[in-house]
Image 1 (cartoon, rainbow, N blue to C red):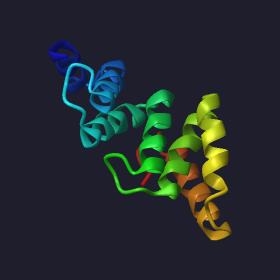
Image 2: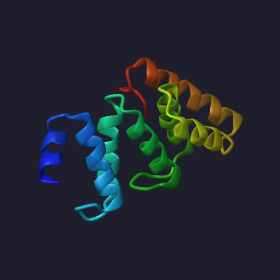
Image 3: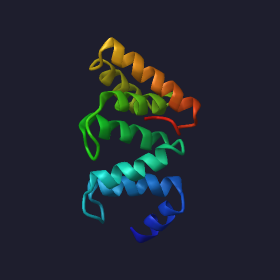
Length: 122
């Protein structure tokens, strides 16, 4: 854990993803969804599709963040654009929960997110 945390704090994207996973599942640390979101977001902003997909799941389920299907759609969408098939399926499921206006808004944010290299995704 300590080595992973040190690497994550230094910006290592794989360590950030792994640290998020550790916090989400309570592997070697107490389970803490808010900390998981923090580390997944850092990895997601560096383009890690698995972290983006997991962040989408956190928003879908309201784990560590308020439940928000628009934000879930955004993160699933950018992960799907990188070829993450799980995210593609989850994006399609979440899209069915959105109103037409909500879906349009989510698609606009996802485009902005992708075009900003994952920096403007909220």
